[in-house]
Length: 222
Image 1 (cartoon, rainbow, N blue to C red):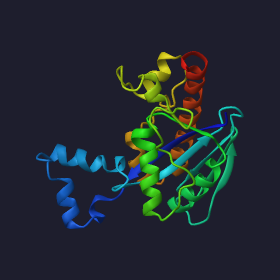
Image 2: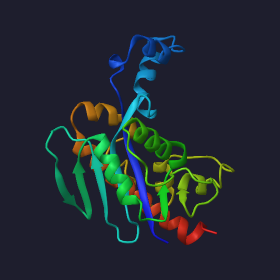
Image 3: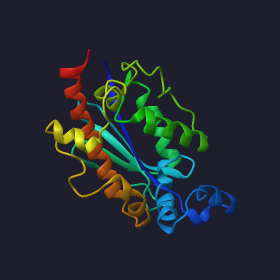
Image 4: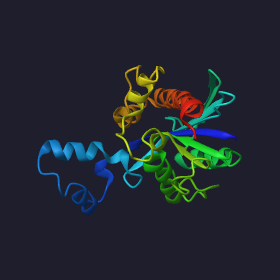
């Protein structure tokens, strides 16, 4: 079966760029300054208040992949590192090339993709008026179409959920978080123009997810 690992990195939009009514709505239940700050920091978790700043894909068989990311320059940047092709562009351009490249694979593999990556990609594609090439949210229990490793490792919610970092360490896989970058830092990194660092972090995530996928295939797949 042809498979493709998928992972995204997202960043929140500028809170002040929202209209007054939207700002009030988002802070409706935030009573303290800390709660208001937290609400603003979580904007990147929703496709309605955030955007995709990097999309990583990796073929687990060949170990080759690509990361499409939003750069800081108008000119496109392309480079190769450790079997990964990096290419910058707008969010719209990233989504267009993403849908084109994954259309030939039968199985999409993610970690928590059904709850986060897949709906985020679909909604951001709609907002950018980009037509999807496939449905990333098929029947939940059909792992042959979309294998969400978090669903598989918890047996569809029968056991406790852990973070990707925690699973990687338990399976003896080098964590993509070991370089000090966390998903919660992406928005700030994006605002600081550290787009290549975000892209490289995304590449580490898809590689680590591919290793976890191999454990699932070898020892847990039914």
